[in-house]
Image 1 (cartoon, one colour):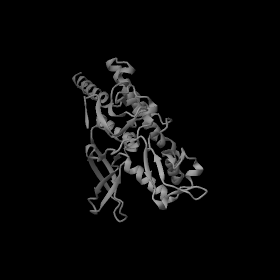
Image 2 (cartoon, rainbow, N blue to C red; image 1 turned 45 degrees about the vertical axis):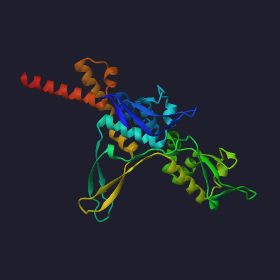
Image 3 (spheres, helix red, strand yellow; image 1 turned 90 degrees about the horizontal axis):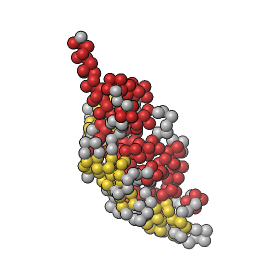
Amino acid sequence: MVGGTMDHLTCLLPGGYVDETGVLHRQVELAPLSGHEEELLADRRFPGGATLVTVILSHCVRRLGNISPVPVELVRRLLVADRHYLLLRLRAITFGAQVQATARCPWADCSKKVDIDFSLQDIPIQESQAQGPLYTMQLSPEAAFKDETGEAYRAVTFRLPNGEDQEVVAPLVAGDAARAFAVLLGRCIQSIGPWEHPSEALLRRLSPLAQQEIERRIAAAAPQVELAMEAQCPECGHDFTVPFDPQEFFLGELRISRDLLDREVHYLAYHYHWSEQEIMAMPRDKRRRYIAVLADELEKLHHGA
């Protein structure tokens, strides 16, 4: 569900945030990106990835349910799929819903570039069927956790991965994906049998089958944003799947050089006498519409002189 005005968008998160009193907050009011967020993106010294997503969303999410303003700590605790969903909506109100991208055919005898054109509105979104924040499952008898005495425990309580988890595991992914997965799983598991917030040593004793079963149940309970697009190579005719990472795609699309941003601000300030604060508060498309209009007017004056 999506609605709102030209400047702000109102939508429902596929998962939502459950506060300390058990109230579920799903409705979000989202403001478009302004020059202030572009300035953050232009600063190469600023951390990227999930940390940058947290900062960008904390600037643009104006309301979550009846919570306003929305603190950065809350944005960090939003579910991974909800953050992906917000990035898609943010992209839509910044550049529009239509996406044009290029991929390379994965077939070794082809490897041609393929143009991909799709709408963000067509990306499948699956809402959570059950709202947490905690979920309980039973391991299969074969996957049951056994203590030192051999007694078996099958009850596991978990929560769903959120932005804070992404920030923690992101530095581990490239160097040790298995370690990153173990850390993520350990952060999500809240109890095993009688052990609440089990230690890392205890979690290491979970069998691969137990880990697999818990991972599957987490995936089944979580809302889903489809992160793969189907494509066909016009050269060889093969169908293939293209991974679509809204985080990398959107943040990469938004990156603007600091020099270009400064020049755009200077251009408008010089001719319109607006303050830097006024110009930086504009969304990019509005700023560039003014630049285009101004360029046309200056061109007319130049030819009329």
